[in-house]
Amino acid sequence: MNEQIKTFSIVVITVCVFIMTVIDILEMIETKKERATATTTQGTVSGKKPNMTPEQLASQPKTTIQFDEMKFDFGEMVAGDNSKHKFSFTNTGSNPLVISDAHGSCGCTIPSYSKEPIPPGGKGEIDVEFNSKGKSGLQNKTVTVTANTEPQQTVIAISANVKKE
Figure 1: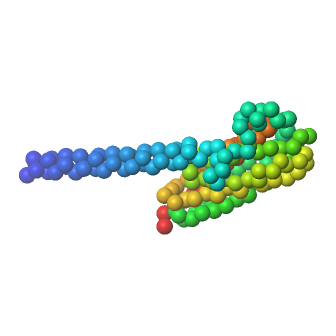
Figure 2: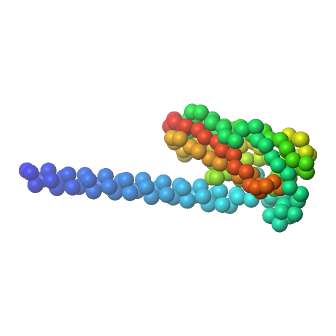
Figure 3: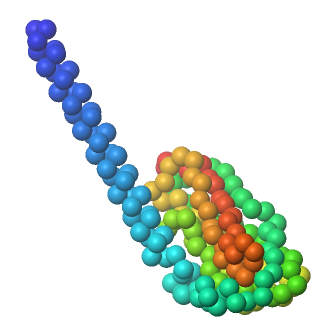
């Protein structure tokens, strides 16, 4: 009887380890899909190419950008919900501000912005949409904004605590 309990325990442990391995593999596949989506969407906003190539942007007169906030917390969300937030900014420099690109750290974070130059002292917005489908727990995502500023890239962030349905 003791031998049967040992055998049964080994089988149960083996099955548990197998299940945990499968879960890890599925999470790695999901992460790889997110990265692939982010990579294929980098340099695009709503499927459009950036306003300027990096070389064209580098040749633009430099200016400065000041965001009203660098991070926004959506708070608690239910998995599957979409939420949006507007990041407002001001061109605090003396030359027109040209945003060349804005891309999220994963496919679940989608920014959109005006392609028009922002005059000195002018204001603009970057809309960020977060899709919590397939997410759970604390989520921290970023949006990298590329413009004729020094440094050329500015990172803004969002967070949310996603609860299962």
